Length: 270
Image 1 (cartoon, helix red, strand yellow):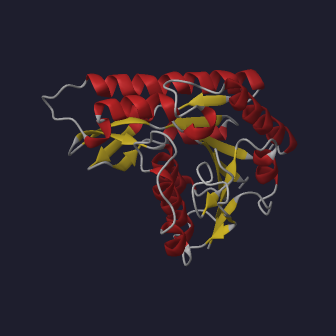
Image 2: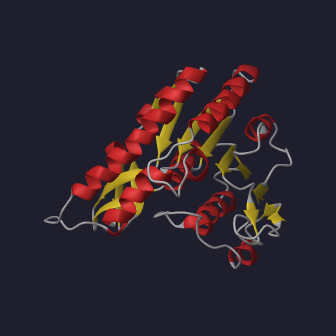
């Protein structure tokens, strides 16, 4: 079986999370070009690509408290507006990747995901499997979804990738954010913060005590929940390792995709 890698482009790097609906097209273009070059160098590599909603979906979701659910007879306008905001960013990302020569195919989570009590419990994966089989790159994103108990929920890109990892068992996962991995303090606030080069299931508790939320608006739990979910995947053997790197460092994504042993950012291993 050819290698399969999941890549997540964080909302913090592809958008300005402090400015509503503000994308960073030049950053997206550069990351797309890095992925294009890696695919050219490794024609057998299979990729599943995901991106966060950043200042698009998160801002609308927070405004309408969509993550808290909506009663059946409640006002569902916020659900529609949040989903539309997430889709606008996805269309922008898809267009820029296609322009760069990466054959992405968008997969809308709200059309194929089912939640219960805020948790993703089912997802139709047929189209993703077919896309991979044809050499295409499935492109998923953080989105709204219907929920059996609370009416609706917001599913983060990590939630979707974690579910898909259980189905497709990627060799590795690469999480691309604003900062170069996990730090003992918020490096955007404290320049003396130190990088945590590696995390294992055994050391996660120590690291978790130092992690806070996200820099900017985030209705999906911030850095702590994102790292916890990745540690859990490694601990269960769903994937072998997870790299957390910065999208600001030109070439870092390409280096990690080409070399699973690359010394970039933070590595989560068993």
